[in-house]
Length: 379
Image 1 (spheres, rainbow, N blue to C red):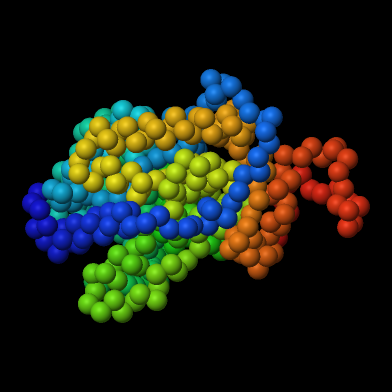
Image 2: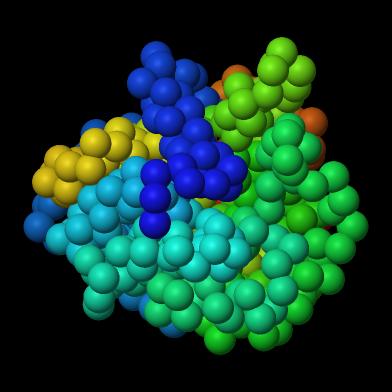
């Protein structure tokens, strides 16, 4: 494996550098800022009672947070993957690789991915592959990392802006169905930062997909990254396109795959908000890339340990003894998120009354009817 030895390798290094540059820019406002947890001053718990472990399909994860797929395939990206894999091993949280397609096409780049399993032999590892690959390639991707699950990413917006990207998306549904049917491990379908709509989640459920990461706008912006790789920035108008993780979670259908959330998860409080909106766990990329960018495993480990400690303290503050209890947390939805709810027929106000017992004699003064204990959503 050599540093940027091929066009694909140079693209991987470009992606890593540009993603890191986005993380060093001033922190942008996201839809997580339009979700406010209603404070109840006497609801707190003893932090020693709080458990962070969470059930995801048939697995038990150490905490409701994981290192999301980022990179791999060059010497530079291998150093980042090594640091992140050590941090995952030391903290016990799951980790996903970046897309291993480059390693399937050029086996000399495989060590940049294999390092994840080598440094974390007993941990929960997800391989990552772009949609459109064959069922056989999906099996090879899983074997490369001895993976526990396979992420398949949907990235039509990125492909549109990418100079060397595809413009034919018509075969993607059939290809995904074939991978889901043939993969030796559960398949997790994720976006790359543009959100999974209600319609898309319904289609994924109908295909038999068990797990989906809504991966919304607000985090690493691959439209901006690919635009920066083009002369003239011809597609700058697509920056910010898509739905946030917050809006994707709010609009998720029932039934749907088990939901994970990523995209703009900047702090442990954002993780808490994602869990309160129905995500089983939250994926973090950019915030963990910053300490790992130089290959410093100790710093990356310290950052993740800090997140887990703060998550425990936040759950105690909000009266949740485990992550699942956060789904009863009262939320105030404001700004763009409230507008999204109004335009799509979702009951934003209902989220402010989720923890009110059905028998509590509180009425709406305009209707004299007891408000719902759970938010009503459109059908």
